[in-house]
Amino acid sequence: MDPRATWKGVFPAVTTQFRPDYSVDLDATKGVIEALVRDGVSGLVICGTVGENCSLRREEKISLIEVAVSVAKGKVPIISGLAEYTSAFGAEYAKEATKAGVDGLMVMPAMVYPAKPRETLDHFTTIAKATDTPIMIYNNPPSYRTDVNPAMLAGLADIDTIVAFKDSSGDTRRIVDVRNMTGDRFIPFCGLDDVVLESVALGCVGWVSGMSNVFPREGETLFRLIRDRRFDEAMAIYDWFMPILHLDARSDLVQAIKYCEKYIGRGTDLTRAPRLGLDDAEKAELDAVMKKALATRTVLPEVGLPLAA
Image (tube, rainbow, N blue to C red; front, side, top):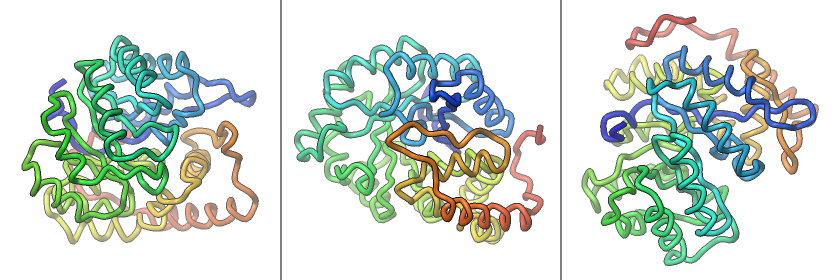
């Protein structure tokens, strides 16, 4: 798949489903993926932060990729997160994920420690040289304490396999800064749910979303309205969605997203340690958010989505 043509729209960062013994439940994860595809999402990110990448063994990640590829059947792009502790591990994973059939790799900085800029650039370069698979650079300084700023992205412009960037810094000015430095060299993606309207209005053509796991049709509808500059209709959804979108910016976003998935019947809330389940007060908070969201849910404007399953 040509990323310039297909890396557009909403790409939920898919949750990894676990059994009660915390083994990976491939069948349940397949069901989650099938439901998202039926609901009309534009692509899928497997084994990202929300997919608990760093809590999975290598063979589990590859099995999850294979499941996603088998479900997608080429209808939507499948991008795998790459969050390894060393550049060598990252290069090895890139090769294995490519063999498993991914359409792209979302590469995070090395997880081992907050690296210096030249170390981060070397990490990305090493992985890019290991594969011809298109790469999306993932910047999330609040979570990973390594900031891939616009100047650093500009320094990667001569590496052909690096085609996109996803910014989760929350600083939407960077979308404009990258464009001013590199033109249309990189495909821009929003990576933080509660700045999606601002990000798409400023030029992001895609959105890697956490809470679109819970409300995929609302997410894809919101994105398309913003893209098409139908801002009055978009604002009505954005206002409704915002209390839910804020959950994507929490440090326990994985637990929050999975709890909301369970609340609405789209998955379980099991996470692997060190991520522990929410406490009673946190669950009560999310219960109130979800109860209000479902009570005030409305008919969505027509944006060309398939009929709801």
